[in-house]
Image (cartoon, rainbow, N blue to C red; front, side):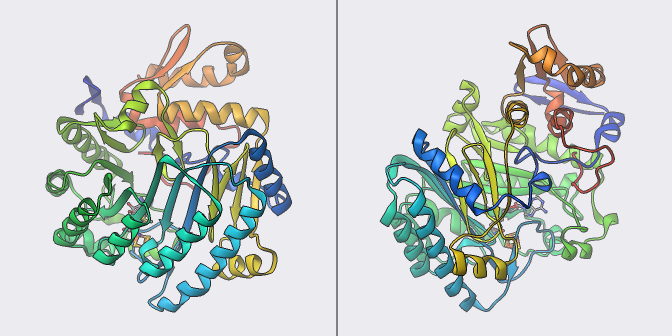
Length: 456
Ligand SMILES: C[S@@+](CC[C@H](N)C(=O)[O-])C[C@H]1O[C@@H](n2cnc3c(N)ncnc32)[C@H](O)[C@@H]1O
Ligand code: SF4
């Protein structure tokens, strides 16, 4: 039995419940999930949706994927090209600039940029000058709103002070640092050695250069992680005083990322031990003044993300939880995903294919999907589950989701959801099973679907 408290409510988790619900399932960073998108969705479909957004003047969220890392961390499930040959950055940047040109031909320049994010891989694989060229090219076409969030993922092991200074000058105001775990044994097994000193140094440097929000990424479920050692990591993390914390459930998917085979399954903490560590993190962070947000995020009570959660305006996209709802997300770079006027589009996943396509045609759309009415409805439901844990049973809800409401009954008996006459709530206990609740509303999920990581 594990006892913890969420949002001031005491909860008890029993082992049988974890055993029952810990099965493969999507994280729902999108609905429908990417495996359901269609090959036939091509550039013409994508640009048609980009134009639709012009009509409504939907604000923009721009994402750029920089896939390079000098070395691949063993635990990593991101889309990465590992190489120490830094010269690869030059043709890649050239391709990105061409892609921006093409997007700018279609997208109305009066549409404001509310959000820009550089993700990876390791965006600081680009030199200061390359970062400057990239952002300068975006600014040539587009204007940023005064409240725009301009953010970047930073690996403290490979980022120079001078790059932080450049980013700050370019208007970057948010960063998330890859931290994962401070324990030396875990770091060795995860294939990522990172000292506390280098992490602290980059956090302090980012603050010094005026970054408004300095956040860290942690992972629970890594090989050789154990509650006592994890407790020490949590303490050290709090000492760094991050503004937000993402605590990701380790996605162990060796069938998708062969390099993860170096991690032996026997070295992984089981579902129960993982939950213990997660619960302890929740308590520790809440006691330190953080709110537990959605699936796996924490933000200070006074942070605008916590406010957005309380006001019901919080949103979740591929980069995590955000206050910026209702933007068209345009992803540029290899593997990047866009979500524009009700359609997903993803660029080519292989670097060569991406570069060849953009060089030849200016675009590299490989697959995607225009959402049907049913998709949009279910997308909204899954969004509510992951952001606010509350579904209103208004309008046609009861008739339309009759099957799903029936399927929720066993979850209600297990205390994961509360089915009330006018709404369905995910309980504080249910916060550990958001993915399982989401799966009930997923019209595409086949039973026995084993290609996802485990839900707990
Ligand atoms: C692109 S990386 C962050 C930037 C930079 N490459 C770094 O590692 O510092 C994004 C984050 O994804 C998370 N991540 C990577 N692989 C993961 C996995 N297998 N399971 C869960 N989270 C993972 C890590 O927390 C990582 O910091
Ligand atoms: S965790 Fe970050 S640095 Fe490590 S391989 Fe993945 S993207 Fe690269």
